[in-house]
Image (cartoon, rainbow, N blue to C red; front, side, top):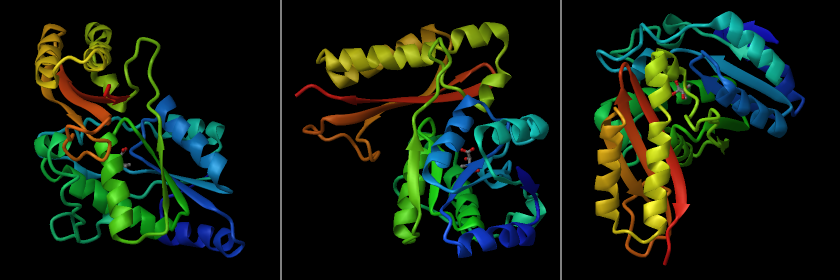
Length: 282
Ligand code: PAF
C-alpha cells in the first residue's frame, strides 16, 4: 500500500488507473482505525478495482472546546490495518494543503434540513465541516463509489443529500455498524472511556434495544422515549438527544412504518452516538 500526502502526487497516482477504466472506491476516515473502519475498506474492496482511504483529522468539523487536539493519531497502526484490509492507496494530507488560506475564509458546503437538529443541533457547523471536507476529497479522488459507516447515521444522510444536490456521479454505500460483543458500537471515541465507563457504555445500545422493543409492543412513542431517557440517566449517561425519525430523518408521520431510533449521550469524557432501525407495527 502506497501512502501519499501531496495532492499532485495523489492525482498523478490515480491518473493511469482512471484512464484504464478502473473502478475507484474512496473510504474517508479520521484515522485511529478499528474494525468498523476496516469493514468500510472491505465493502469498498468488493465494489472497486482500486481502494483509496484517506486519513485527515478535519479541524473544520470540530467545534470550540471539542476534542480536535485530543483526537488519537495512530498512523503506523492505521497503515498496517489498511494494508491488511486490502487498501491500495492511503492519502494523508495536512491541514495547510486542504485549507491553504485557513479555515475561516475557505469555501464551505452547507447541506440544509438534513444537517439540522440531532448532532447538527448540538454541534453547530459540524456537518458544514464534514460536507466541505468530503466534497474536497470527492473532487481530489473522483471515486465511483464511497463507503461510510451507518453509525454516523446523520452524516451518511448529509452525504447522500450532498451527492444528490451536486449531481455527483458517486455511489454512496452505507456500511452496517460494527459492535463489540457487549453491543457497544465501535468508535474511536470509545478510547476516551475509563475501564468503569467502558463497562457502562453498552447501556446506550441496551437502552435503544429496550425502546425498540417497547415501540414494537405498541407502547405510545412519547412515553416510551421518556422511559428510555430515564434509563439512560440511571445508566450514567447525560443524554443529548433520543429521537425516533423516518429513515431519511424527516419527522415520523403517523402512517410511517420504517423508522430509526437515534441517540447521542455523554458518558464521562466521551460523546457516544448510536442508532437502530425498525419496522413499526401497524
Ligand atoms: O466519519 C468520519 O470519520 C469523518 O466525519 C469523515 C467522513 C472522514 C469526514 O472528516
